[in-house]
Length: 128
Image 1: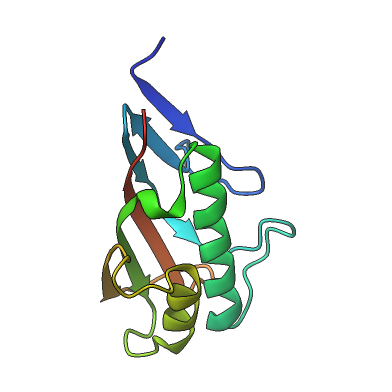
Image 2: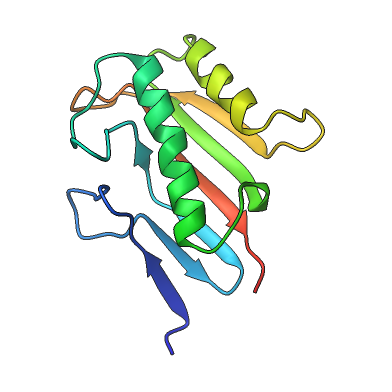
């Protein structure tokens, strides 16, 4: 058996030959997750819709890797409009409602292409 396992998601792929995430033992690191709609593969125009899709991708990734949301240790977000965090915060609180049980989070400004307004990656520690 290989030590490293690539994790792919249905309806989500990168333009380059890379998986959605990689796992070695209990350690899971994602690549960039975007707000592209996994059903239509279209990029929604609004940040709100892209945020919904990003968090949907996070849920799908954790399920595909055999993990749970509470296995996530840290998430990093890149935003086209760094100060526009209302939609991000709404989805964040919906996914992690307990302020005493949330992963670390970092948000940064970025120049994103293809209509993308938000991207994220995550680190998780899974049960073996």
